[in-house]
Length: 303
Length: 303
Image (cartoon, rainbow over all chains, first blue to last red; front, side, top):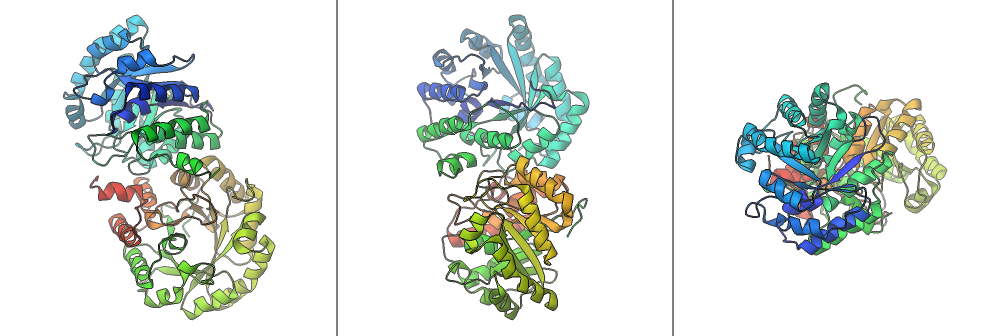
């Protein structure tokens, strides 16, 4: 991962997974493959391409094995998958996945609601997965949700998040992405969280994951960048949301983030016009408005 | 104005002027008065309430004299008006206005297009107005548009903006608001501009005015706050735009800014729920969607 003083910023594109999983419109495997290939060709180097989870729980993610079978594997691009347990991990491996992600919640309330178990039970569930991944040379990324506020438990202390992030790193995750799942964070709470975490953990082991529900996502990323964080999750066209947080809008739009980074002299390696085209195509397929302000301004010919 | 290390931030509410002037829906004088009174009751202390300009050019601002006659003048609240020339200034005085604003462009192209004269001609036009204001104890605020990019002339050098801001301050403006009229700025260009300006001018003589066309407004304000800027223009519900910049969306939403400031421990004195209610009411009157993400999340019961 880029170091905290680097001009390089890593963008993990979560549109095909966190994004589409929370869209109401169904989408075909062929359209998912097209989106992922479009993103790869736009220069996106980290793409979360699917989820190996029971289709009973997340019907939108059915067919992730077919997605992985159908995408072009561009050189230098990592195509990862969310794997909640050993069963999902084995299925991912069988589909040729070389990087996986595990998912914990910062609060007991959200862990129970989203994962149906306590936080420590979720870690126990990941333990064999992380062992197996290590043995087979598979990279594992950790997510922590609700780091700046929880729809069940309210405010979240930075201590709680840092301790959990440390556990996930100790268990073998190469990076932990801290997620403001309900988008309530501001540069104030974002800075307090990362300042606390950075007392114990290196900047290049942490990522930021912001939703734009309260309009704060880019400001929060700006605050994170200033503390040396250089890895962020985003979703093309601002796809997605969170089905458990009422009215939650999607992830920060990748286009808006790339535009900001370009303006700050920071490099993501992503071609903005190609990214905008990829986002607009998936929006048209889904029949949804494009949530990226940069895409809307660009497509209005305003450049 | 608050000093650069203060926890107090001044918000100049420009919705009733910069906002409504660029809305397509006509609005009655009574509805304008209601909006301004709602804003005052929400704790907004600086409200740009109208414009004394020829209705031939800006029909939405017709009746500003009736607006000033009809509003409640709450103690501690400044109700200002845009006055492009002596004729407008005299009309504003006759309407009981005690603070006015003048408007210049950072580029010759935009000055010609928007003001129909060169930059230096626009300053000559303001000169007698500033003299008269000084003689009568009327505060004058200056605006500079297109400070981070121009639809006619493209990129804008910080030197150009700083020099013009200094001229306006020298002529007697108590503060100059630097406007990213087309919303193309990023925290990179915003920081470069204010860093340059602050080499020559005190922080408490400058304000930031950001439009959210490219989604960067709050991030730009965050960057400005870190450089000690403590005065910002915003428009409730993200009203407005710029008729001369194709596809330009409105000013940064006041609600989103207040939410961010609250989260950063900075004080505007504004009651957020009352502000949200004021914005939603004007949106319903105009039959337009509320552009404040904070308002939308709040009104979805997401708090």
